[in-house]
Image (cartoon, rainbow, N blue to C red; front, side):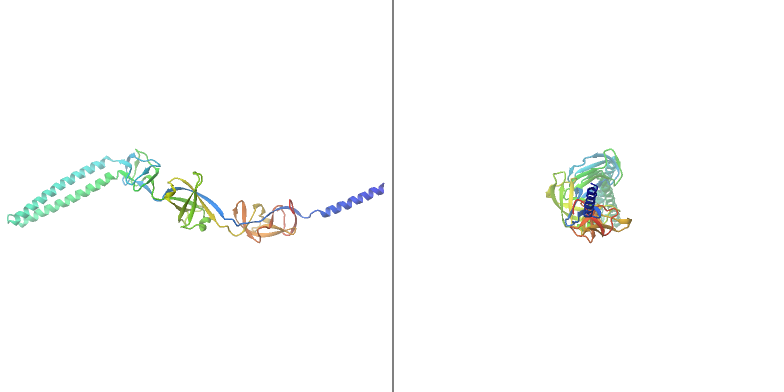
Amino acid sequence: MAIVLVLLCAGCGSHAEKASAELPQGKAVRVVEVEPNDEPRTFALSGVTRGGSRARLAFQIGGRISDIEVQVGSEVKKGDVIARLQQPGLEQGEDAARSQVAQARAQRDQAERDLDRAQTLYSRDAATQQTLENARARAEAARAQLRGAQAQLEQASRGVAQQTLRAPIDGTIEMVLFEPGEVVPPGQPIVGLSGAQKIEVAIGIPERLLASVETGQPAQLTLPLFDNRKITGTLTAVSHAAGGPGRLFEAVIGIDRSADIVPGMSVVWHVSVPPKPGVLVPPDAIARPGGIDQTFVYRVDGGRAHAVPVETFEIVDRKVLVRGELNAGDRVVVEGLDNLADQARIRVLGGD
């Protein structure tokens, strides 16, 4: 019986050693395939439509606002009244200037008649040369006085006219900045007017997209609040100077009026960008062993992990764009990177 037990135990040890020899060797890892970066990317940038011609309307004189005839969204025609000021002194000044013109005109007319009479008498030798010259001087002075009075009346009339603010173009009121009864200084904008002749949209674009757009190219737009209705515009201007560090650059897109678009509508611009050179790996595949500046991925080949130096760029669809000695279809380690070294033996879990 003892001999049989010894033989059985010897057999068990032999099978255990054989099974142990057949087990895969190396660090357990999980891998994924490297993906190509061959699809163009589309960015959705948003903006709001506005008139191609815009104006901030202001009174040239200061005073108290008596009436505002428009509100946000009002459609106006060229010459329509926008607002009025209340300055009674201007009307009084105009009336006084008009009286001065009437008086100066009467004096001129009298001086002209006196001159005609003096010329007649002189021609008949009934008046001296000096009398004629005096009549001419009085007539010329009367004419000059009338011209001065008329200039003062024109100035007073302009002041009265400047109490009424009118639309310089057809368009839509996009903002109203004051209310009746408020006092405004000269030149202070009262309302914002968006012209009706042309429609455009200004959209901020990040610096990395500047190389992908140029003036004159068509722009594909959608209206998110109108079932993503599609319209087409043309890129008319691209700013090459931002408002400051980290600020966006402005692109202006002209929209055809036949598209039935009005100022104030939300628009999304879809910008397609060609793919950049490189391949895509998950963020978990990026390793920086020992805290060094160089980044690596570990490519699996022949049961070993090979450290491949890579440069990292941007995130594309939740993956990292990298460049290095990698090809689409290569397998890289995403789990088990701890203490993984170049040329280390590995065994792939859930796969090979």
